Image 1 (spheres, rainbow, N blue to C red):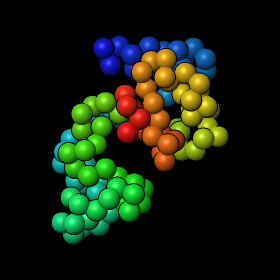
Image 2 (tube, one colour):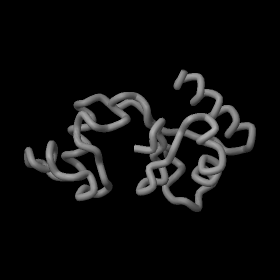
Image 3 (spheres, rainbow, N blue to C red):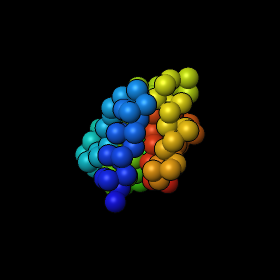
Image 4 (spheres, one colour):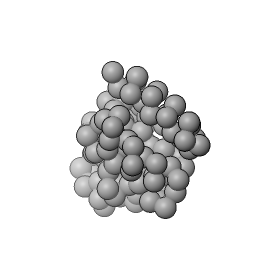
Length: 112
């Protein structure tokens, strides 16, 4: 299961000296709040504007892998030069996780 895969990924990273922390599940209400913060407060900004027009890019409510509990934003992966990103880029796919190319911190079961 996904939970077992993430537990193994975290344990293997720790064994290699990389401590991974972050957040995964996000409620629909939390997704709306992020859209307000990153995209604007209008109905269009929250529910219709393309994610790429937000800063940082933020999925529309109902489309985020976080709302399905299938994505993790790692706190210490702010760029591709971090130990977190380097370790994940070498190892995450063997646990079923893939990176969203525009966000080094965002890893999910399908790369979205």
